[in-house]
Image 1 (cartoon, rainbow, N blue to C red):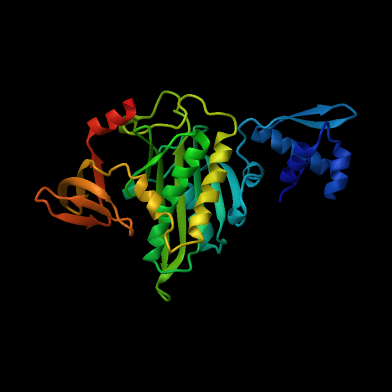
Image 2: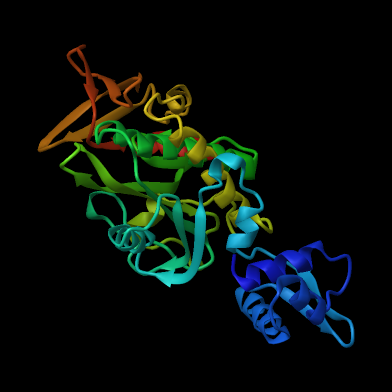
Length: 332
């Protein structure tokens, strides 16, 4: 734990002002180290006053997204998470893939205030402005087959949906296979990227990326994104919402991850399906199909009734929903 995190803990535990000299003694560091730690915390957004002859006092934590704040909300199953919060990155997935190639351990988590090249599925970009979202990636080193590792994305979708429930008090839904919707709008995209280990037919590593919109960006979402995207809270999120959301996603995800490949989350994934009973168009390779979604099976495949009455399971593809269905959801 860095000095700033340790100083923050002492300030949070203190009933009044905390002396710099006393904190230095407790931590076994110099007073200058404590001063630098306080300066760093202020730069992160913490409001800390300096009282002459008394010491430092933590006035407010606001919505500061910091490793220490997130760690305090983690449950034992997520203890392996090693959290690094950065001001700006190209993409949290890109950063973690580089760390994975350098031997980074499982459980490393990178969170960014802003991404300049956020990634979405099928080579799309993910709009990631500062302050309005939670952009997070987790490094995993699965000890099961590459085929079973496909469940990582499914587990993450349920984890995000449950975390949104925890933070908002309302229910999130999942649009097959990896988008989370809230009140008829997409609020989270999930992207898992992996490197295969051909020697043991498993994965060398997997990087799980999750981007969630908490508030609307100033001026609204750009271009075509505006037709689909939404946020959890609109103009303003409650204090601490991002911190709680980050912690709850990690808590739920690591619970499921430790139970792979048994997939204990599939019943809930199915119950949260946004598409069940909905008429869709479906892109499978170069073929465009139509049908009615019957549900999601235990292997996370989409079960569709085709126009000729036959039923077929799809394991991959791109689904489009009729706009009037989404507009109806948004009006409810």
